[in-house]
Amino acid sequence: MRNANLGFESRQRGVVLITAMLLLLVLTIMGISMFRSFGMQEKIAGNVREKQRALNAAMSAQQYAEWWLTNGTLPATGTCTGNVSSAVGQICINAPADFTSVPWAAGITYSAFTSGGVNTPTGNSTAPTAGSYYATPVFYVTDLGVYGTGELYQIDAVGYGGTPNAVSVVESTYVITQSGAQSPNI
Image 1: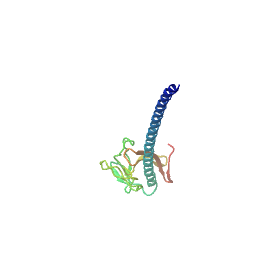
Image 2 (image 1 turned 90 degrees about the vertical axis):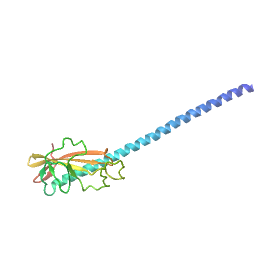
Image 3 (image 1 turned 180 degrees about the vertical axis):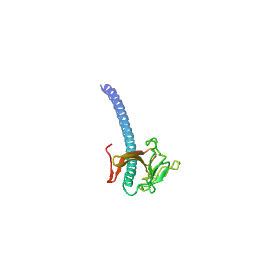
Image 4 (image 1 turned 135 degrees about the vertical axis):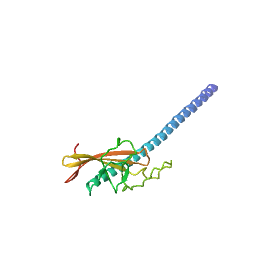
């Protein structure tokens, strides 16, 4: 009798070893997938942050352009061919072919934008410093002509995050009348 029980117990120990190894394998796979998931979530969060920074830079330039139109004397209207400083300013009668194609060949550089610093693109492969922007925001003011009792303008602005891949373009339409500026219902 004793020999029969001994064979059964040795077979039981082998099953426990195989079960433990399978359980360890399953836990290892779950652990690796969790770490990969966390890494992906970090990348997504970083991309969302950079996109938000680009959007904030573009909106800041757009709001500055709207303020610039409503305050002081308006600069001369002409054909825009290159980037100019926001201190000089210019209202353009020509619009670029496509505002979604960046970088723009013409526009007004929003030089008052200093939040976090700006890295000027130099063509080298060094990464920008933390908290900096890839390029200074640019806005473009197009004179669309007479609208009611005022003049209609289209304001387009582009802003960058920390890389050239994080870019946002925003647009607004603005009317300047004798009584002040307003956004038309177009």
